[in-house]
Image (cartoon, rainbow, N blue to C red; front, side, top):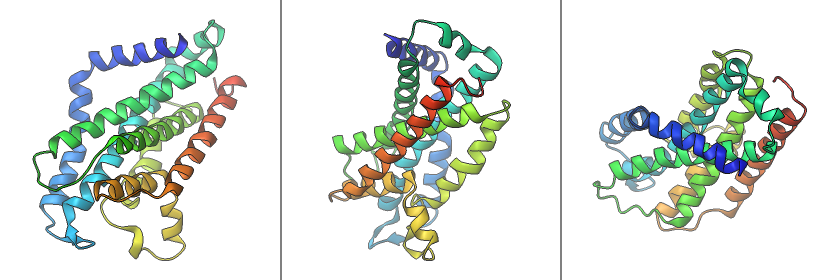
Length: 243
């Protein structure tokens, strides 16, 4: 019941701010599609650049949507509303509260990705998105939801949430196989960028969209991030650190 309660809170928030959330999910990815996809008429790996770009934008949207849905909200609840103090003394198991936050954030990320898929559906690209694609989107969203949860526990003030976005999300947006392939990056740097979660999600979604099988190692890496970030979140909240 604790998970359902948290998800209901997320749903109520989504209904209240539906237009704001939808517009926010559309503007940046749409600008990227117009500027990079329409403005730069090039090919990548022998295919139209849009065929490379769209799966990357979809993966990126799951990242930004999930991270934003959790990071700022949790920072405000912890620092100003003191809502976590109430959770600590409530009968709701803490693991259910954490899981509800993670699932709710991931669903928000999938919503953002679905908007991009709808906007690009009229473009004849031949890209394929199937059930496995949506599972990867959900998995990527859970990774960034748990990362946002960890960072919200580390935040010292409300202004830290935008800083985390600048330090972590923005660099991954441009470097992690979204707008251009990492293959031309220098050795060492390429390998580091390649194991980041957004790089793996983009690679797998792009492979499926081209009619190929995704690399199973991508799932291993994403699950590893999820386990690490989830464990840190549990440690923070159960030891009452930074609360």
